Amino acid sequence: MSTKRMASLQPPLLSALSEDQRAAALARFEQLRPLIEDNVPLARLARELHLPRRTVQRWLTRYRRLGLTGLARDQRSDRGQHRLRPGLREAIEGLALQRPPRSLASIQRQVATIARQHGWVAPSYRQVYSLIQQLDPALVTLAHEGTRAYVQRFDLLHRREASRPNEMWQADHTPLDLCVLDERGKPARPLLTIVIDDYSRVIPGYLIGIHAPSALWTALALRQAIWRKGDPRWTACGIPDIFYTDHGSDFTSHHLEQVAADLNIRLSFSIAGAPRGRGKVERFFGTVNQRLLSDLPGYTPAGIGTPVKPVLTLGQLDARFRAWLVDEYHQDVHSETGVAPQARWESDGFLPRLPDSLEQLDLLLINVARPRRVQRDGIHFQGFRYLDLTLAAYVGEDVVIRYDPRDLGEIRVFHQDTFLCRAICAELAGETIGLKDIVQARNRHRRALRQTLDERAAAVDALLGVKASAPQMDEPEPVAPSVAVAPRLKRYRDD
Image (cartoon, rainbow, N blue to C red; front, side, top):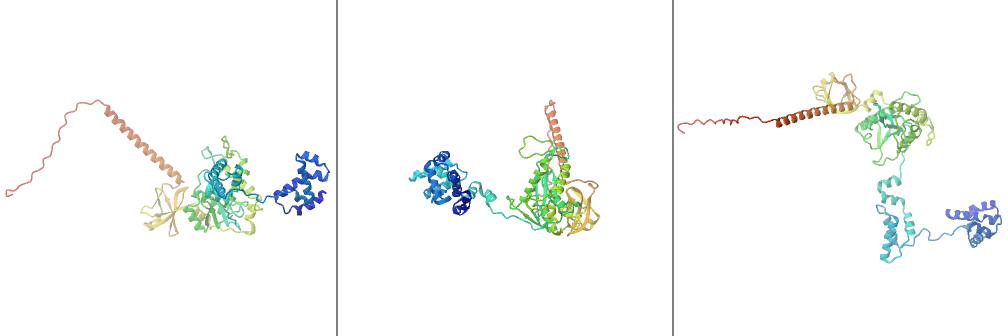
C-alpha cells in the first residue's frame, strides 16, 4: 500500500482511537513499513527490531485485516481502576493527605499493616503510588500547604481591565537591583514607586529614592502623575477614577483617603495578603530590570555573591530612568495591547480631568491636614508657635492646618473649609526645616541633656567616694539638742 493511500485512510481509521492508541498504532506501522512497502523479509525485520517473529507476524495479520486500527493496543476495560478494597483506598488517600506530608514508603507500610490486621491482601508499592498520583492537585495543596497556597494556585481570578485611559491607575513600590551613591556618598539601594495606567500601560508618575515608602512618598508620585509634565513626549496626566493599590500603610493612610475624597477618586484595595490583579505592575518592574537596570553600572541581581561598587548617584539614575521611560518604554509597542503605551493613552481624543491649579493639588497631596485650636499666642504645632494677624479674630476657635512635612516654616490655616491665612513660625522663617530634621534635633538635644545628667551624677559619686576614703578627724561630742518645754496652761484659783 502506498504512503499517499495510507495518509488518505489515516483520519477515518484513527478517529475513534484515543491519543495513546493512535500513537501506538502509528509507531507500529513505522516499524512494519519496510515489510509492507519494501518487501523486507519478516524474519530479518524481526531480528532488526529485536522482537519475536510471532509478534511481527501478528501485527502484519491485524494490519492487513483491520488497517491501522488493528495495530492499536486494546484498552483494558478496568484501566485506571485499582482492585483494592474500599477501606484500603480511603486509608491510602487519608494518609497521603495528612499534614505534614508522609513519604510514599511510610504510607505503603502503614496500609500493609492495616491490611494484615483485617486479613486483606496488602497493596503493592506501585498500587499505592498510582493511587496517590490520581489525587486532585488542588486537594493535595489544600491539605499540605493550607488555604492561602490553595487560593493562590487554584482560585478563579477576576482580572481587572480598564476600558479607557485614566479609568483605573495602579501604584506600587519595589527595591531596584542596583547599587547607587546616596547624598553622603555611601552605597544605597534605591526604591522605585510607579503609577501605571491600567488601560494604556503608560506611566504617568514615578519616584526614585532611598527612603522607606510612606504616605508622603506616595503623594509625591501621585502629584507627578496627575499634573502636566511640560514634555510633549510625556502627556499622560489627569485625575483617575479608581486608584487600585495593596493594603500597605502608605496606601491606606487617612491622608490618602482625604485626598481621594477631595479629588473624587475611588480607592480600591486588593485582598489583604493576596495582591491579585496586579500583574501589570509586576510586569513593568520586570521590564525595568531587564531592559534598563541590567545595562547600568552597579547592577546587583538577586543572588550575586560579591558586592558591586556603586557608580551612579541618585540624580543620575533618575535622569536615565526618565529618558528610558519617555523615549523607549512609552514608544515601543506593548506585546499585550499591540499599541505603544503613549499612543494608546492619546487615542480617541481623550481629555483628562485636571485640578484647577498646581497649588490646589499641592494643598491636597503634599500638605497634611491636622486639627488645632487657636491660642492667645497663636497656633502650637510640633513644638513651634505660628502667628498671623488674621488669627486675632479666631482665638479659641477650632481650625484645620495643612503643612508640608518637608518645610515647617509656615502652615496654611482653614476655618470651616475656608482659607484664613498662612501662619509663619518666627523661629523657622527663612529656613526650610523638615519634620525629620526637627525630630533628629530633638533627639540630639535629649541625648545631650542625658549626657550632662550622667556627668553630674558621676561627679557626685566621685566626690562621695573621696569623702568616704578620707581619714576621720576627732570630732567633738555631739551636743544633745535642747528640748523645748511646752508652756503650762494658766490655771485659775477657782478651778
